[in-house]
Length: 301
Image 1 (cartoon, one colour):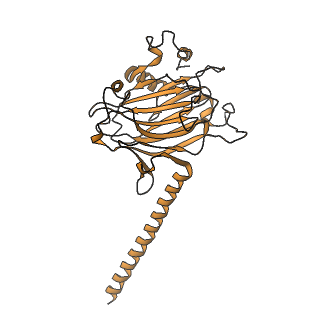
Image 2: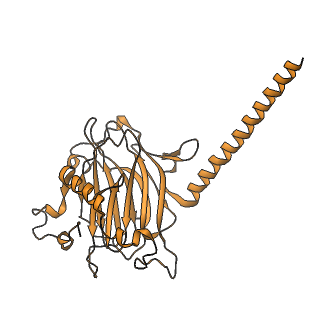
Image 3: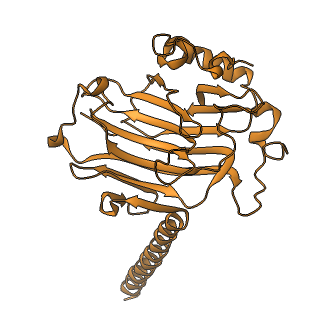
């Protein structure tokens, strides 16, 4: 009899623990979803946006009708911004997954912009990562790199460091591109307008893969890119009198060590320069017989 009582009590306790666990699990999931809603807005095609059960992972899908995207509610001027992405696997020709900063919610003609764009490819061919910098609506500052891993198999971290001295694009903390300022008024370094953070997936088969020769195979749709762990350590823009200046050196991303590559970062950057650069507009003299002003600035300084 005593054994049966203990058995019943044990079962009841197990059920209680399970109910409490489910309650807290649901609460945690709701909190994560609420956190997303508090920090981001869906830009378009909300039906193409999904989350994992715990709300911590976000899926953007592209079908023949539309892609999808989201952006931060907050704008920033200077800081460190990172996101983990897992890109579309298989045949992704024509598909672009993007993670970028922009001063406007649409493609305004005077916008500033910092781009990570991941250009899909045919099955078995490597992804190409394209970065670009816009100042007052003028871009054409593309660089393209290959990667040393398959970005479709797991999550990797893509980050932007932005202060008034340099912009650095990182992949897993490896500096892929260094874009310097000359510390005087110019037409190439975006440092005046605050920017939102965007994430999106869209069809660009008119240019993305082999210059548009490879078209999107819609029989493979939907194409899904995956995001998680957005982190920002930047100066939040507040109207009408923002405190977002990049000269106070109060934040680590605005201190001297972040104005230049460190010694270890220079070693990584040298390796990238030797092995991963696919295209550099600063070396394209056919396209630019007279190279843009910023091309004279050394990333090593």
